[in-house]
Image (cartoon, rainbow, N blue to C red; front, side, top):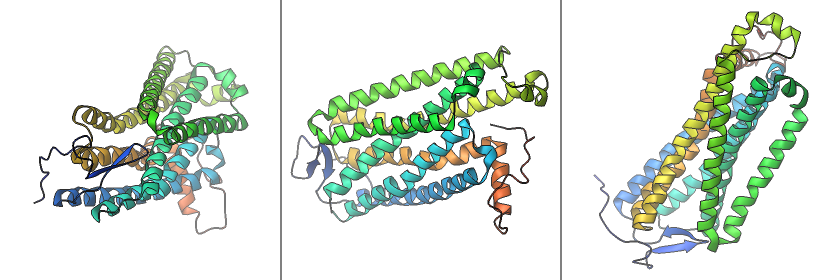
Length: 334
């Protein structure tokens, strides 16, 4: 059975077995059995996760574009989250798998290593920011329904999403263009993540307070007719808010190993345990989150599940619209 040796080799102690690529450390010494075992484990986990990510998010995207009733502000941002997640399955996870294979054979490629880390930085940040956009949209829908109905349009949402994606792209570019400032970059990103988490928490609490106090307002008479006394709306909006909050909590939990790994690195330095255990574990959990997201919000939302069922049943027909038999009276479990 392969065991992790208690070697104290670190980047600072022995530069002959460690290298750097734009301040990204890597191991170039003799590959031990335990290193091979951990790499094989992470390869298998990421292959399975990658397949689930591609399949689940592809199904959701197909259903979204074939179901008109899903094309509203809330589902628009879930669609963007699916696009981000499928990008993880197409780019980040294959790069990580290739990287782990190369480590087994003591092969290192600086371009691949940099591309993998940059993609993880970018797509993980975009996922976090997209969840925040969902929270903001839910806050407008619950606490400012008239403004939401008037101002939250597909065009404006697309513009906001484009700006967010473009601005966040600057961060990995700066990180690798100015590698000597990588510590400042890490502190800045960490601070941004904390601020975003606080913002999401405040939005969730405000939504729940509005729902609990019965202050949910409707801007259209049709909604008032469809939902007697507003009780069903309160229940639905509360579940929607909880789903978004749970997605955020799971995402934060997936990032915890990254914080633990960075703490270990600060205390013990860069060594084989960090490079072959903590770092790939942190990357894997962050990337696995992309396979969890579509499964979770499909499980929590009856309308999405019904749309998937209708679309699957219409595959043998010439229909490109899944709305024809869609039951709009279904009660959402989100």
